[in-house]
Each structure stands twice: as C-alpha cells, then as structure tokens.
Length: 350
Ligand code: COI
Image (spheres, rainbow, N blue to C red):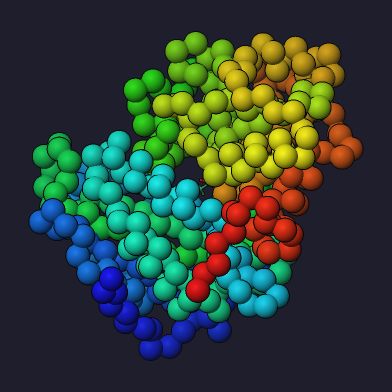
C-alpha cells in the first residue's frame, strides 16, 4: 500500500507538560488522512497535525454524517507500544459507517496508517501508570452540497492525544425517564457523532440536579437500563455481574465485551440480559446492589456511586473487594503488557 509521509519540521513535544493534561485537548505532531473521491479511497497520507480547510457547505456540518472510534496506545518498560483489540475498532467503524451510508475504510489502510502514525509519534506515548495515547479515528462527509443525501466525498482521519488516567470525579447518574439516546431502528449501536450530540442536553439537565451522567433507558418504556453516559453499564447484584445485551440501541463496546469474557474466566457469574429499573431499585433497597459502573475505552471502568430515579435517590454502599477495581486493574495490566494476555487481546505496534 502506498502511504505518503510528510514529517513535521520541529516537534512540539518539548512544550508539553505531560503531568498536567486535560483529556483530548492536545494532539501529537502528526495526523493520518485519506480522502474518498470518485468512488475510491485515494493515497493515504501522514502529515503534520494541522487545521482542515473545508467548504462551509460540506455535508458533515449540515447533516452530521460522521462516525468515530476511540482506542488507547500504551508504552511498556521496553518502549514497546501496544494497542488493545484494535481489530474490534477497525470492524466497528465500518459497521457504523454502513449505517450512515458511508463507504467502508479498507482494513489494510486502517492498520498501516495506525501503525505508521504511532511509530512516528511514539515519543508521545508516555510510560507509566495511567499514561496513554488516546487514538481517535473518524470519518466525515466532505461533499460541498447542502442537499440532504449521502455525501459523495469523505475524509478518514486518525488523530492522537496524550492522556492521563481518566478521572471524571465522583459519578452519580439520573435514570432517564423522558429523554433517550437511541431507539429501535436508529443509530444507537453505531459510534455516530450525532448520538453524542443528542446526549449533551439531557446530561446538562442531569448536571443541574447535581448528577454527572444520565443512565439511559429504552426509548419505548424507560423501564430497562441500557447505557451510562458515553459508556456501557454494569451492575453487581450480590456476586453476579449484570449488563444489558447489545442491540440496535446499544453500542457493542470493546471494554464491555472484554469485561464479560474476563469476568467469566475468573469464575464471576455474568448475566447478559435486559435489566429492569425496578429490579435495580429493589436490589438497592434490600442491600443486594453492591456496585454499578460504566465501561468504555476512555475511563476503562468508572464506578457509579449513586443514582436518582424520579423522586428517589439511592446511594450505593462502600464495598470491599470491588469488582470494578479488580477488573479495571486486571484489564489495564493486560493493556500495558504487565500481565499475561491469555485472550490474545494485545496488539504490538511495529
Ligand atoms: C469511551 O468511553 O470510550 C468513549 O467513547 C468516550 C469518548 C466519547 C470520549
């Protein structure tokens, strides 16, 4: 595969304070870019990170035809760089693209671009606990035309942002009883930009009530628990982990499926089934609800300390030997090449 590489004249890395990063604000020296025109992906390029020039009529601005992915790269003590199950992200961006009537991005371009970019910007992948490079592939519609139909032109890109351990502070959630992030037949399973845009207003209303995220329920009845904020969600009732099955409404999260596989292998009972709000309320009241947590690439696992549902407010007990911390540590040890990778999840960048 032909890949054009234009290197930056002078790296900006010396100006970066790696001990004081806010998530996703700062980007590495280079970016990967590939345009789709006349029905084909053109020669991909790696070039210095820079602003894009797009016509104001580009369809992405008007109809939100855009999908994205998120991954993390880690550096171990031997300076090797590792990704976690990037094959899953590669497949999923094309699943998302298909739903938004966008062309699939070729697998070999994805992996070649990703590896070359990470090698070129390897100094930006910092070692040490909590440090990683957040990798953001995305596709946008670039045809200059405001007619409401699928674009003829697209841009696939990968940009990378150095991040520290994602600590969102204490998280409590409001169970959605009016708004929804997705519906049957919609785009909930896709990592479509608009899914996130549509979640911001309900999240703002939750924040006004003092809650950091929305615990999303099914759109038709609001009786079943589906996702939390931008993450999949797990509940621990006694010693069993529960999570909702993936569906056309729920994102098939890489962290979610890894947690299920890891926990089952550890002998933890996992039930993947529809979870009723009433079941969780009841379990909270009789003391059986021990933990709740969100699962996603950015935070890996984010414990949820309490929730509100209509007029009820529930605070979870403090639990010893929490599944959240055990699973988070185990997964991040695998991701960072500190533990055996018996599932074959690590991918070495070379
Ligand atoms: C994740 O939790 O991995 C996400 O998708 C978060 C991202 C929207 C910043």
